Length: 291
Image (cartoon, rainbow, N blue to C red; front, top):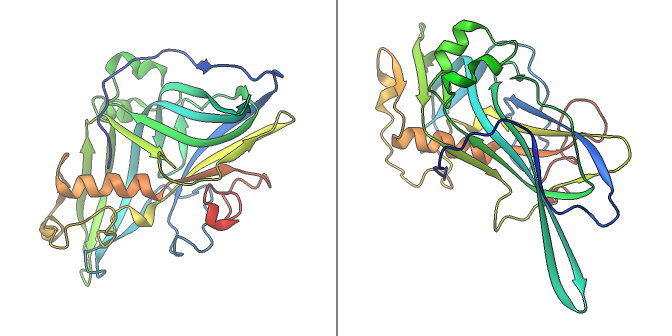
């Protein structure tokens, strides 16, 4: 489930925690991507950078039937902060000791998931070398005071996103229909996405002190409106009648919205782009089952 957080404003990049004893650091870039992927979760899950300006997503009901297709012309998320968590366990006089370091990319960053573009670009940071097993995104509504920091973003989009955390818009085409209807989903909630969180096994990714470490967070968009996933939707009778109307508006805080947010969180994978091809391959993602 998505978690509501207090609103906190940061204005710089911060590294918090303790430094490694040998001072080893690695340069890291972070890329946020989204692409439809029809392969099963445990099959090949390559995610490439989108070149189009729209995203097609099937809407699947609780029984697994396809209700229709969403074409998202815009899919924006406002990320206030991104944390990469480093865990270093070691034995000291036969006593298990754990030190923890977090690396924060502090925004806001506005991410266009239809084109996989971030405003402003995520910076390169030098962080402690070692294994990172957890990434957290804190999403918060875009504040008017922060709009000018979004270098490269047009004024119209800035106005649309001000006060919003997520904003999707496009067209919904019902199965067997010939003409689509307008679709929107917006929320002003504070949201936390935690990838490979507490209690979930993950191999994470290794930051090397030599060279540049390209880390990718990849969302699989075809999972977002799949209401047959019982892990994110326990209600077999969820009311999806909104998809029968002359327009489709998903209300913030509704049961449908909560399932979509949970699906987004679950669909995300991350890892290091070891072959530098700009894609997150099966053997590069965080899933231990791929080993």
